[in-house]
Structure formats: structure tokens, C-alpha cells
Length: 257
Image (cartoon, rainbow, N blue to C red; front, side, top):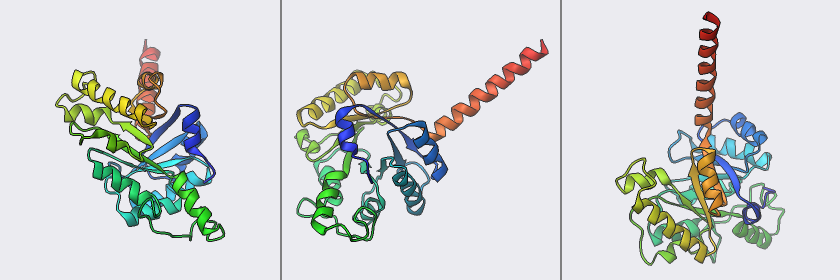
């Protein structure tokens, strides 16, 4: 839990990826590759809490910030994830002020929130860190990330950004929600993205997004985004396997000529 990821985000764009294969070896490979963070996907990937804890512990040992995308951030589950070392909680389809308030509440200790205190963990050095210092450190350390990917967005929308560290654009879901799947250049989709960017700038909130390739990532970085998730481990595996077999088939065809 050594990384000050918030400070790093304030200094430079950070590049991460989605973790959908809950194996410590995958985390080790991504860390050695040089990624700034990983997002453990408990929304779409088949990852149990026990599996998540294993990969989180691996990431913490490697000083690799790990975010958990969690569709149902219940207090007990969030407590356990944060206590094992998660850097932040990311919720999909943030569209109501209550969604944002709930996310902030379950990730912060009183009086700011409702997170309950547990000190049998590494962050508190298993109770050796003074309670006051532990509470302050955790409240400062933990990131809250909301995905903006729906047509609906409660007003006044400024309240959706209160206490939010990162506003994350989910371009695929945003296009689907607006009825133009696969077309993120649609005027309505781009208008929503621009609105989120303007609100983030007004509230000093970092911008983040999913990018399926480097070209897309560069467009976000050029616009000042700091939290960029490029592709994912399954896509890397698929692309590598496809490229290898394509080269192999070309080699056979060339050899036959």
C-alpha cells in the first residue's frame, strides 16, 4: 500500500488495463509490463470475492494500484476489499446523486462516511498504526470512481461529482444507451461526454475512460484525461494468439510457394 496513486494522477496520465482473469501470474505479468494500475472487474468477469482477494494481495505486494469495478458496492464487501488493499472502488452506470453519495459513504470512515473500522490488515500494520492516523490515511488514500455511461443523468448534475475522484467514460455502454451501439461519434454521445468533461473540470475531478487501442487512448490523453484503461488481459491473450497463428499460416503458405 505504498503507492500514492492520487498524487501520480495529478502529475501525469496513468495507463492501466482490465483484469478479467483472476490469476496472480496475470497481475505479475501486467506489473512487469509497466502498467500504472489494473481494474479488477467484478462486474463482467467471473471473479469471486476470494479470487479477487488473491489478485489484490498480489498487486499490493508489487506496489501496483488495483481498482475494483463493483456493480453492487455493499458496505461489508467494500470493507473487506479496502482492508485487503484495494486502491479504489469503481461503480458502473453512475446516474443518480444517491449513487454517488452511497459510493462515497461506504468508502470513507465517519464522520465523512459510514465505513466501519477494521484494523486486522496491512494498512494499519495489524493495529500498530495509531487509530487516528489510520482513519485519516485511509480516507485520503481511497479513490472513488464513477462510470458515466447512461443517457439518464440526474440534475443538478454537479452533485454527481461531489467527493468523486475520477469521472470515467464508458463509451461502449454510452453508445448503446443512446441507441447508437458502436457509434461513439454520434452527436448525442459526444455531447454527453463533453458535458461530463466540463463538470469534471469545474469540480477538479480527474477524467478517465476505456480505450480499446493506443490511438483511442492518445485522443483521451490529448484532452487531459489522466486515468486510461486500455483493453484487457483477455483481449491481449486473444490478439497475441490470433497474430501468432496468422503469422504461422503465412509462413506455411510462403514455404509452399
